[in-house]
Image (cartoon, rainbow, N blue to C red; front, side):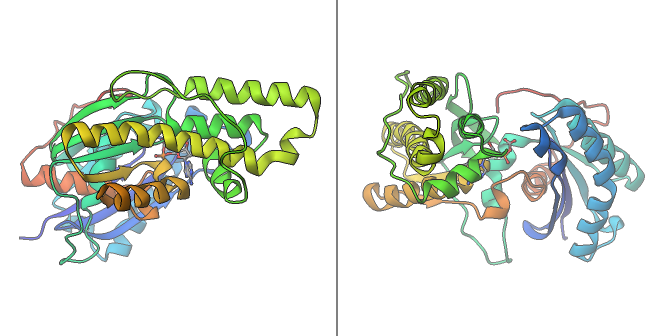
Length: 339
Ligand code: KG4
């Protein structure tokens, strides 16, 4: 029997709906929210309102692109958290309403686990490019930086995580002080291609285990700009590419150093990356270099699955459906949690 799952994602500023049948993606529709650009960051209240406007047309389009009717759905999966509570409430309420109307099971999905499980989305029936268990996943986004040991699809262990800012936040905040638009990560990535990654020395954290910290780097970047701007008011304009290249190289060094440690300590060479920052070209290159140097079998998501998307939610929902792991209609979203 076919298992057809509708996934709904609304944890931050992307409204997304996707259909997965037997693990194969049939559609993945994402509506971004331009409204936040003027504010230099996501405004939670505006995000909730935009989700409210987008959710019906986005779900409609996902069903249409998949070529199915809503009655064909085996279950409705939704992101329960972590994320912005007001945003999550829109997707959660919609999913509940639809599941009740269709008399279909409801499945709650953890957004962070979904990023990891995006690696299992099949493009075709015969696609088996997914990571083999156990594997390590570097999850790097605007809100998280974690190294996760994935034992099974439903058993994940967070080995380490950031104790302050996430990697994406470090990109975005440093970009902001350079006067670059939000989100700064992709802009830094683009400008870094023209710059010298060794032009500026920035601070790297010295913290134990597999944890990360990016606040020291952010401060050292800020102090560098402050000191140099006193000598030359055009410092940023003159050195923008070198600043971006040095910043990006430092963030990547910090990320890869701990990942290498985890790979050595656990003797795992099956390594994946997920989350918004996994779109970064320098990080992708570092993964490829590590594959060559250390014999890692790497798994880098296609760009469509780096940002928030509902295909990963539908995929997680598919696994849970097979396990009969259904949610109660009175479950409520949560804003913060470990995996
Ligand atoms: O996973 P994601 O889409 O959502 C949130 O965590 O909200 O991640 C967004 C983050 C932002 O910080 C953004 O600047 C960063 O991912 N990002 C990048 C790149 N593309 C997106 N950072 C560096 N290089 C990129 N190419």
